[in-house]
Length: 505
Ligand SMILES: NC(=O)c1ncn([C@@H]2O[C@H](COP(=O)(O)O)[C@@H](O)[C@H]2O)c1NC=O
Image 1 (cartoon, rainbow, N blue to C red):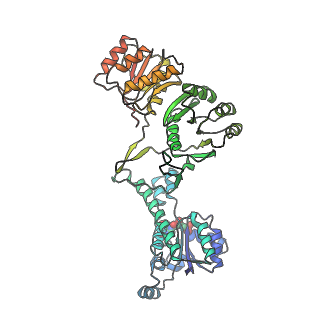
Image 2 (cartoon, rainbow, N blue to C red):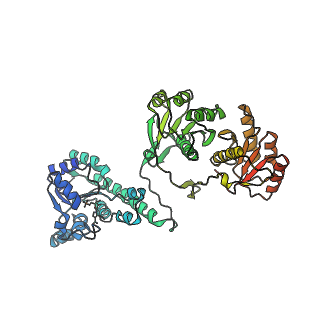
Image 3 (cartoon, rainbow, N blue to C red):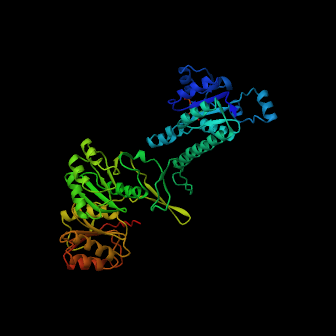
């Protein structure tokens, strides 16, 4: 056990420090501190020696250099069982520092706030991170507290051990310090690198163990901070599969920003999507698309859930409901089922890059953020699309983009009728979609079709025309495009090309 006799405190955020400082006072710990922290501590009635008095040097360059001095780093780094180190501390009048408490400049927060490059660079902490690394290296003699999240834990430890620590404690805090310093540097690297250096570095410090992975015999965990995206208002913990579907749900609903829209997701694919004048109607129309698949699904809305919608939703067994807001009466209704997960989506953008592990590495790509509007449609048939068909085609193309390949989406303006998902051939996807739409009583006469990739043969338009599909949207680009166009012309069908393929695996 080692008694703590001296401490250096240099923290960006001063809050939460009071109980720890009171404890150090109780154990007669000599305190050293930097400018702002010193003022705060003295305000708490603590006696503090300024780092400037120790170094006999002022803080310079607007605080860029304040603790970077041999008297500070020597006080931390000298080996207490080394005769020569001890002789040098005497010769250079270096006092021992047994505890280092640092809270770094908030670099990540500064980047997230959209600050200028100049302001962001100033938030790269140099002295603080050096103090953390020095104290962590010398854990044999020094205890390091490297973030304000540790204040409670360290206060408990010091109380329990009456102002002392043992080697195991110090080693544990040292490991944490390098976790914090490497995380910090990873963010600085990613900010400055902008893709130039071909390395992949990520650091997500929050790990949430999940009940299990994709199946109960697989373990699973989520790395990241879901609280930045959602307030969970009710229900059990999100499972691995819930998270995968929630991701698909929020990506799809982000396509619909104006009119009320609802999507119902099963195993990452939409089994219902609708846009309507009210959120209740959008939900009812989405549900009508495939009420069988909707059972146990993940539902997402782009507008607040009111009481009437909640009453409709309450009739269905679903796993997760995501919405930007829940009216209080709606929440009361929906909370009627214990496990049902209710997520209030915060106004926070998702990252624009995607990564996935495969083989013995990771693949990374930009997210598919391209959404086609009517302006992107190039009519390739003799008959041009009507305004109503265009509306339906834009809608169908949005759903198609978020459905697993190969996919065919059949829709009307503002309602998904059916989709064929994740098929090995486009013809299979279309057949599946037709069968499904008809099984739920939808007529396809006058409906539209969207395909995630081009038609290599005219087979899909031939099948589609037989059930009355009137207009088609597809990327185009096959050597046999003309065969599909000719067939559409022969049936008075309209077809538009977008030039953009939307595979989704
Ligand atoms: N420049 C230095 O020598 C230095 N030493 C400590 N810091 C940081 O200064 C902050 C505290 O400063 P103050 O006590 O003046 O409010 C802490 O976040 C600490 O990590 C420094 N600032 C940046 O590197």
